[in-house]
Length: 331
Image (cartoon, rainbow, N blue to C red; front, side, top):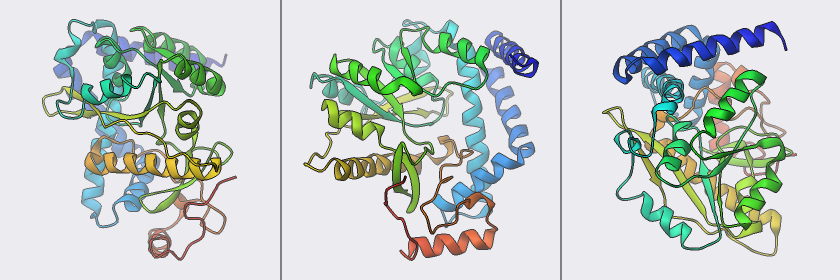
């Protein structure tokens, strides 16, 4: 193990331990201050967020984009605080921090359960996404979910232990297919975050905010193979520092005799749902990720390296249908 990696692990553990001791209100204020510092100092991710916001919301002003990006940094940083507090969370006190939406909440979850075919959770990097499965488990509904292992091995082992501490099970992305199919076939539930860029070998280009984005077909594939309902779920931050879990009505997949067609149609539906959630609460999404990193042949291969004028020209042509590859397969 490289000394640098171990040093990062030690520092991270110390920071988590510190925030675990600080009361929630002052800890939240401090986290937001640190997130603001990161926003102003981290030029690279600030630029990525701005490009993404230009793609998603072309009518926003520079000031509006900056405000959303800054709040996104703060919401993302809240994951650190929530992870530091996991140890203190119990079934008896979780309700004071996380509750279910009265309109789109447990009613939709129970409707999915009643089908008796397991549940495939569709979610993304919204708000304090690390808290969502933990809170759901503490409310009595544990699940399995896929993660990509961190490059820092000791911190990955620590985070794995934390993530599974309340009854959930983490599935390594590298070996996920067999485990997910087994979970769903036995009537259990599994979650997939499908809002991140993926390799063209693992997905296809599906429009997101009108621009092709390499999107995993995993959710559609697992649902087609098991007939499990797809349950969109996400966490919404509230102004009082608490959170609400929202579950949209469960979805059945579109099924024909053409698997490639079914993968495309269903993945497009799921992307549209994620887009609606982002539009509804843009400040809670992870804008600092290169969601449009890969592009179909004929499009600029690095949207994040374009000048403002080049990006605007491409987006204008793309939205006019004058670029190749919209909703085309990748790989």
